[in-house]
Length: 383
Image (cartoon, rainbow, N blue to C red):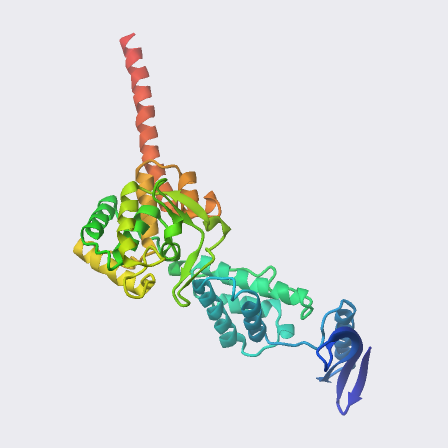
């Protein structure tokens, strides 16, 4: 029940109700009890605005929303991802949630969830000077949190619904890849300079020949390698912070891929290191961290006389695709090998290769048609 009273020159709204709740008792047991919940707010300049607020409280109360809970957006988002996501996601993904949380603190401060309107959220999203795809992913995480808050009875409306997403196209990073000649040169140098005691070069070779991600390669254990069938089973991802294996990026990332017999032989050279991890080092018995592998990659590229700005370990994944594509492997097989959700994901990432294919096809079509036309024209002249 909502009560409206006048205090001086302003109006006050006080809402009270008893809600059924499971309450822990002093002896540790639980029982159903009725708890008094009260919400009080004053400062309304007119009785009408107070009545509108009271009506909203009544409506939310009737729908079962917890009208006493009033966390800030930033606080709720942080609680939400810690309780629902932290133990299920990879460290690289967790970092993104932490960054998302900081963005909310920086923009909204401790603004309450219930006070934020769609236009407020729209203005916030407009401030993100990031690539369009990054903005979409950030919005997706915020939306998941808000839908959870609605189901949790904290708020009654989704202020993220219908928001227009922009992003800055200039912030989009172009996919980095090498020419076929450069890929073969890098592979050759990595194989020639390898040393089983230092496994970074072996990880680089494996990335070039499998297209697997860093975490997937680092997480490989000897039980994942079938040296007779020449296959590796990818079903986990290495977390360099916890130094343990965790889940893959998604369910589609779990896969078994065929590899070359020579790569298997190279991997078996690492048996001497005595680690459960295929790429475990001699001393620590764990795979090298990404910054160490990245340093070795830069040295190998320098030896191969390859200069490419922003080329990182993940770029080796794109090089593998270029290798497969050059050998006429179809895109569906490539998509499955990479562990993508579906073929559309693969085609979107490697659109530049599709454009190149189209240019080659256009030239081929033009030449073929021209040949047909010339043959017919020549035949007419001969007749």
